[in-house]
Length: 179
Ligand SMILES: CCCCCCCC/C=C\CC(=O)SCCNC(=O)CCNC(=O)[C@H](O)C(C)(C)COP(=O)(O)OP(=O)(O)OC[C@H]1O[C@@H](n2cnc3c(N)ncnc32)[C@H](O)[C@@H]1OP(=O)(O)O
Image (cartoon, rainbow, N blue to C red; front, top):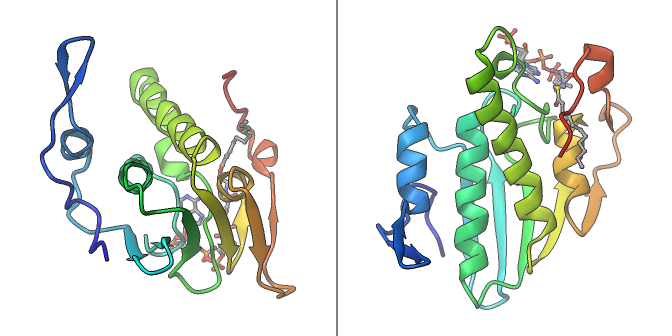
């Protein structure tokens, strides 16, 4: 069983003969908060990992959150024993509120660029994963939350009329950049 994120070993990697930053170092660079927003449990006997989103109050996708999520997906991806990933929420009534609005309001173009790259990295990692990915949507999942679940192979949503899902970001005046 994996404990929590942030516990990646300080591995180094090599690309075209050059040393490159390890994921854990990238996280340390970006992550100012010590609180863990992602919890992963890996069951060796089934080869299935459950990733619980636990960023209060509503799992909004901040730069820290996205970084931690990507590192954890990457870590599972590297584990040959892990065949499946279930993504779900620990927060009541909400799977994910989508992008953290505060990350895209009043920020510099550089910071916005860094943030949107992290958004792109998140959906590319999930969409391109070699694991079977399932979103267990146990609450509302607007905009970026919907995007996150759409990049999984399968989606199952709790049957509750109070939960909503969909792409509502244009109502907020947010236009996704060209990718
Ligand atoms: C191939 C690629 C294609 C790509 C296409 C898509 C690209 C664009 C993708 C995404 C864009 C976005 O994600 S923009 C964000 C859109 N999100 C929303 O509009 C969600 C708004 N929130 C809600 O609807 C509700 O909060 C909720 C249904 C998620 C939960 O409702 P609930 O009643 O349980 O909780 P509150 O509303 O009281 O909220 C609690 C608390 O959380 C704050 N909050 C909510 N959402 C966000 C958010 N997205 N970012 C930051 N903060 C958020 C809310 O303000 C409350 O804070 P306070 O307690 O301090 O008031």
